[in-house]
Length: 604
Image (cartoon, rainbow, N blue to C red; front, side):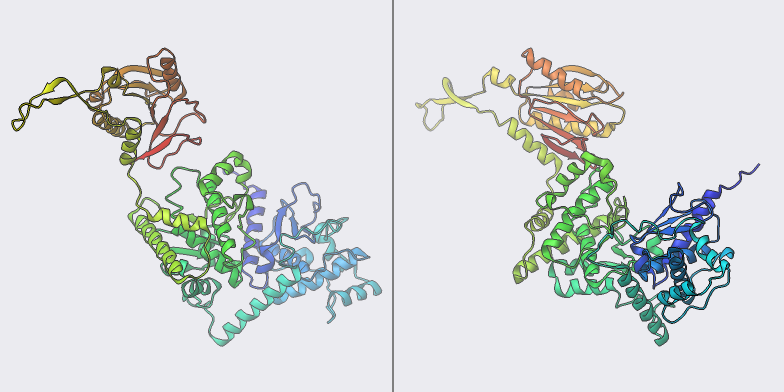
């Protein structure tokens, strides 16, 4: 027996379709961007028999379970948005007549826009709308007797006994009060709609073809960067611009996003960015590519890393005075002005619940740089972006044009340096802890005399004292849990053994760890090159292994200061208490769940 469809689900689908329809109306796009459309689950503002209510702050409350066609929802939501644009959502006695006049005038405006249709309950006798708009109609309705069915037009909106305009006594809560008013947003939409109508009438519109609009804000921003900003000019030339509203909706992109491997930047044309906002957004996405933020994530949480990089980039762009930050996806905090992305990430990770509420240019909780990062095309694209940004920096410095933030210059230069291989870093770690032993010469046992001077005795080379040779030891805490790959164990142990033999290390104290610690005793480095049986392959707990070395140090069987190498895949405790000088070996792309105090080597 088939399950009956849930009325709440069908109502939700109709509402979402209606909101999507309104977002495609050029006249209402600027208004809809700043609306806050929600569901009145407790019927605080909308009665059981009503449809919706709205506040002057831009909050529209919808009935949670009313089933209707998407076209009907679209018309009623559009009427509410137009009321905000006409600035009629306010108190006026008698309130019911004022709300009726405002709704009727907004309904006629939606008729002209051809948005949706009224529900059947709203098909009542309507008065003629005078030329003076809602003010004239309000005075007429107050003087003349209003038909009872005409009054039901207003009552159907929010239900009998309720007000369509709610929250009238609340303080203004505009998201950006200094940048817009509801009237200015509607005026902007009308201007844009008129511009599109003129383009269509002249035959120059791109709505009937797939050709990109060369005068769109995104493409103008690209040309401005190429022509006037040498730092990002070469980088901007290597990326295509995708402004299709359907494509942006497919990838859930509210404002912008970038795919480095595909060399494409998405800019949602429905957002209607100003030229300066488009310039800021385009430069923001280019810096994500040029600074290789996708490959530098290295096992971190994707969204928190994206947010941390946004804080850094937006701070640099504001310091450079490059464009105007958009109202959506602007992550900026002066406290992070001198912090790196890694430092900001660690601070965001301390309050993950709050950090999840941040919004990037792609949207709430979304990453605005994405794509496949394991393909050769992505690696080649990142190399190109890195070189292009370095060339732009050199061009800026040679021409002496403008000042760049010191942090940005340092980040570009550090990326332009070739990375040090992990085995070279490990060799340097061995050199620091095990300097070459000093061989001294002594006459206690003269060497063979030279034939040219047989009468002159020559000193012989004496090895270091036995005590010094036996003091060249270190410890290894080896994660032998089930998540550790055998290839990683073999590669790490082989490198450790090779470097230990080259530096004349006497022995290695090996501690295997899964859920418990297994002391394998002192092992000669040569034995690690042969087949070696490890113990464990269960859970992961590294602290018992560290504690085992600490106990050995207290008994005089291990140096009190180490050194210790910890080999793990990062799936361990959130804190390790280590008093030894230590370092970590991890697979490339993995990271520790805490801030490491010792060196970290990423094994490829």
